[in-house]
Length: 188
Image (tube, rainbow, N blue to C red):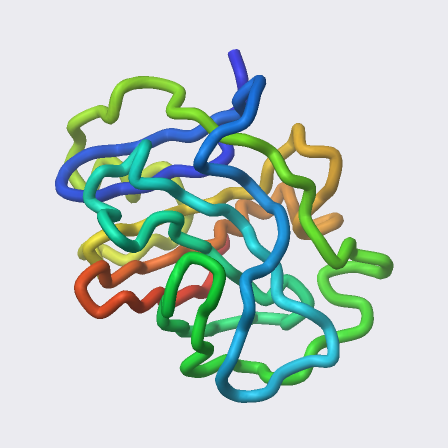
């Protein structure tokens, strides 16, 4: 069995993504789109995953959907608007200054590109059944599409260094109508 890398929940459906053996329209990691908006840095943001309408039909013209997070920003919270697939407008980021050693020294500037496929047909589940898989999830669904990315063990890089075992999960809330994504992390 292949490790699940990305979990998405929309309209009472759970989409579980795992490594694909060939190119796919959805991926873990990879290059950043163009970012405009408030300044941040000096370290870059990271693409955690890119999801496609090929796998989640509700994405429509938001496909591909870049899911971006500030791995170098301790306790990062950010919000951005998707202008188009290769351009996001940063609406807010906190903190706006990156850390030299966060999450650990020599963290890569780009996460490895791993093509993704659905591990199974989208299963019908309640939000509660989806949320119970991850620590400290909001009690109610906070957005049209909720995406959770726990620390992977099989991509060749650690997301949190010694903290991978702490259950830190990057949580994306996507408002498909407004084309906005809110991002933070939850931990046990």
